[in-house]
Length: 287
Image (cartoon, rainbow, N blue to C red; front, side, top):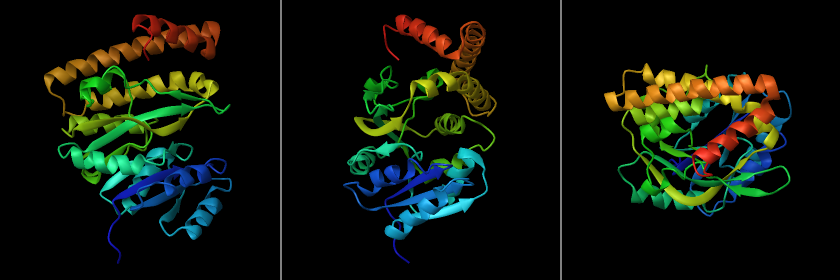
């Protein structure tokens, strides 16, 4: 049996026939080559499975697992359980890695032996081909580490996050009954005491549209509240973090109430614009 690769890039794929090939190509084009790709076809009803199998036939580093639909959390769990590396990379089937992503993260992991979770900066890619640098990390990036308190203020862990298998084992995998399965996973990981390290380079790309942003915003906030509630009830928090979690829950409830009220009056797209404008003024124009 061949030795385990340095990285396992885990890709859950549901009805991703239009984006999966480009996503996988962005991984196969890495300057660092000691990796495998684990694609989980999560019960797709289009040609995703057939496409994934063609990609696997063309490159022995690509492996495909098919299952009945279990959602993103269930697909990530299956991917990790079929992965061989100790360093796991999260990648959605419509997102991309810059060519130097794995090479840079490989060196960064070695430079930060006390950390178990590693993220980098990234770009938003819009339908018209334009890119926008993500600013989600700006309020804490100077620390080069996100604490649980930081993460309670805003979910930021973006595309191409890398984490050690020990994190997955300690948390117990991804929740399969929550929309915000990644957020609650990271919250619980930090609550367990795992440290995060941030690489200030834009090495990943997240596809995003204005329609998607406005349509999903209320659902995301409700899911975030459930995630914060989960970590509050985990029994893992010290008093300071518990206070921060309660503050985060209050902020989210107020945000949800505002979006629900304004959405009923203006529609969700207009409500999102209004709330984002107010937040921008409050935070000096930051995200």
